[in-house]
Length: 102
Image 1 (cartoon, rainbow, N blue to C red):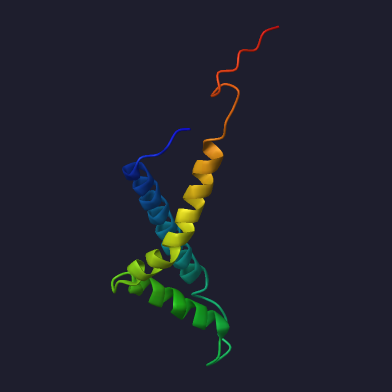
Image 2 (image 1 turned 90 degrees about the vertical axis):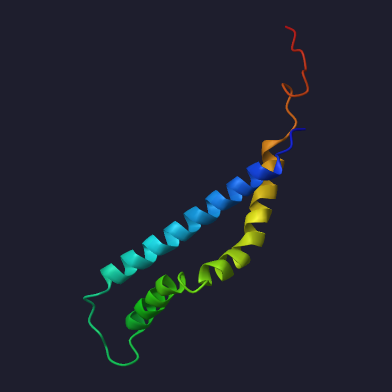
């Protein structure tokens, strides 16, 4: 059974975390751009509230909110990496060197 080294796992986790942050930033920016010309229904407008949350999230990356979000996402990534490594290292006839004679 093949095992991954620690630096390889850390690279995978860093790459997945970076991609998740990039997707979050892009989706937040696209949502803000798409909803800038909406018909506001007043003080309790849900679209304005979502735009405000997206703006706060985008500004929060300067304050260390990224560290907090990564600390929440980190256990999920560990579970996914564990499941992936278990699925990738299954025993096959080739890995067991089974000879198939006809």
